[in-house]
Length: 407
Ligand code: F6P
Image (cartoon, rainbow, N blue to C red):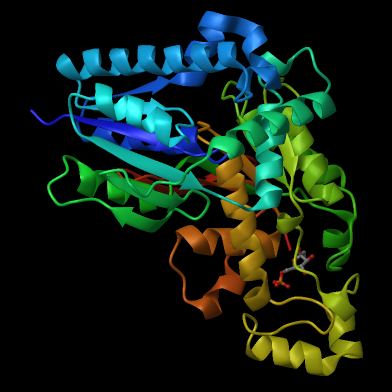
């Protein structure tokens, strides 16, 4: 029977745990017995709060160093025990950033070990990821600012000892934001590697719900853009959306910065104390430039050329001083990657977006010719439920309320 250790490598907040969970999910569904051995969990279990302080991670702190070493060895022993039993793949989920640490683990290994380095140097995302980490119970006694500082200090200590994968026997470096292989050095015949490689480059969306905000004052007037609030019907739709999710905990809700999106999301999160809400600028509705706040009829009257040119190539048309679907793509893709990265291995994620934004998100999962994308129907009384993992693809439109007067 084949056996393999996988050693995660990377600075904190680079998506290692998400990648580990994704591999666990993917391999387990293939019947490959896989288990994660997380050093952080073990550290919290054994050492508790005192191991959260940044000083614990200082390379000059001999006690901290020895304690972390001990935890790594303990987890390695547990991983070996698992593999010597009926396990196939043991994932060592830890930073493992120093060559010294990796050598220690390699010396203890009784089966081949594949290192997977997670790289993500997008500062904004790392920042957002750190913010998410500050919600962990180990930082509960600190303010958000203090927790951020503490975590950043911890990262700096790891940076001092970071040595990228080069000399190891088998390794792959990935861009953990875009699910891309950056570099690899894996000889043929490594057990399960074709499956693992496939998992690494696939999207991993367990349950993504995509809703549009409820009806707004602007929708009623047929005006575009702006930042108007929900109408009475809009509130009812948002409430119905909230009711739809009763009993199913949503872990993360992403909104745009606009009022209508946040107001709608509020109904969902009201009864979900553990849900994290993250507004993203990337999910703001298409910027109609000189046409912002106008009615479609007014655009026809005041800017007949714009109306005509747009109707001839809606996807490729870019509003003067604004955006077009074609230019929106990069921003929305970035927002989606960001949302999926930040929500990690969450079971359920909701995005409350806008008409054009949701069309772009949908086109990521559902193949549509470009010219058809700006016409995808995005109702305000229904949501899209998307699952996209290696083993399962699901795409369904679910109605949560009867009335739909969207425009
Ligand atoms: O009408 C609502 C709205 O969200 C506007 O703010 C936006 O400009 C428009 O939809 C996008 O849809 P379309 O590309 O069909 O004009």
